[in-house]
Length: 291
Image (tube, rainbow, N blue to C red; front, side, top):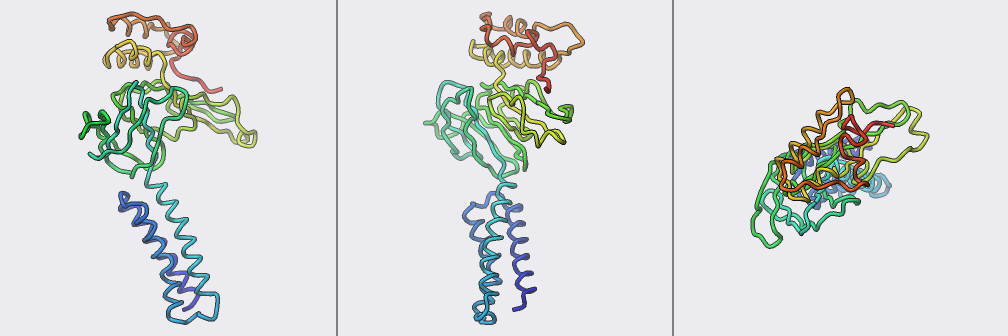
């Protein structure tokens, strides 16, 4: 078998493997990997069996090269067709997460200063749900569309409130990046998040600053979390977030937190160490600014 024929066979195997991954994202990873190996190594195996290259390394090279390229193709297509889902359990109890009506994982309460547990999910339309770990069906489900690239966050019971911090370095700008308070939802489709539940660094490697770069950090929105911990319902927290999102540096600061507190049964005070994230306390623009 000619070298060109071997090469065409390997390329065809790679192409079919990639198309298979995109067309059937729910195919089990082991099955996809097995098919990828079979397709990319088939041409070399056929050449070896037919004896056309038994005395030369051509067939062996085709087999090894095909399997190697097949492995790379499998990894690349799997990552592209299985975006990351983070699950933040902001409650004080274990929660069972469901995917398309099937149990997915039990998530314990997530610490507020560490990246929440995550896994990969086939891209496309799904149903996410949650329940008590002993339940046989989800107590509540929500439609979720997973897209290739970016990050996805599931917050069961809508207990979590979130804030995106965008920081620019060098000559870059944050104008095209989402930042500020996120709507109160149980599912968020996000751009690629660089830092989870922590701040962006003060600086990055100098080599990246030559052309400028940006970083995104996702954090729990402390004032909103405080409202939830004190028993404020979703309506009060939604009103608080909507108020915070409309704040502008060109207008007098709004007492968004105070207004939200008045919708609740009690009126707590934020601890001094948390007032830095209260709208109107030190950030009248209502959104993190790039350095």
